[in-house]
Amino acid sequence: NIGRRKNFEKTTMAPKTELKRTRNNAFLFRKRKKAPKEVTIEMTFNIGRKVKKVTRRKKAPRAVREIKRLARKEMQCSDVVIDSNLNKYVWHKGIKNPPRRIRLVMARKPREDEDKIGKYYVHVSHVVVSSFKGLLPRRVEAEEEEEEVKEE
Figure 1 (tube, helix red, strand yellow):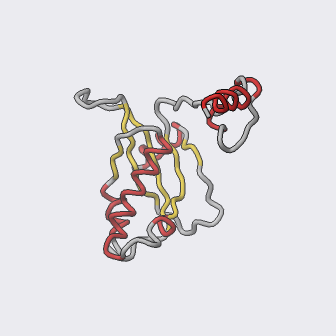
Figure 2: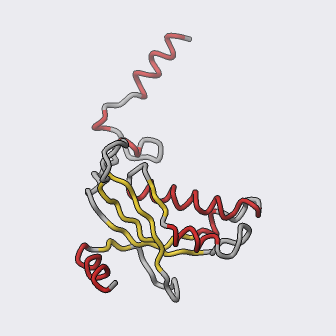
């Protein structure tokens, strides 16, 4: 048995240069992208798909957790802060009936207090749109952010 196992390992183990891309070893070929320091992304999130099979009394809390999970994944930062207006919008139809879709603005910002671990945090806010048709995720440029601040 042991001899067979050794032979098996010798025949199946290939050098990394000879590996073919398959579903099982695709992680070897992925390049880690370094996340830019300060960036803002605007995207649509389909809450309905995430809370479809959840108990009805847990739908709004699950929606908030899923928004945080999305922000962690997209912005590659573990500390996520949800804006109070976004929280109110998720809860405005009650615990059983959160909105189906939501347009989010996720901004990675530098941390001001150095007590916590990590240099950045993600601030997630909400944008009101008339229709979600044809809206794609996009990176909001710094110039557009400055214009929005000046308008307010």
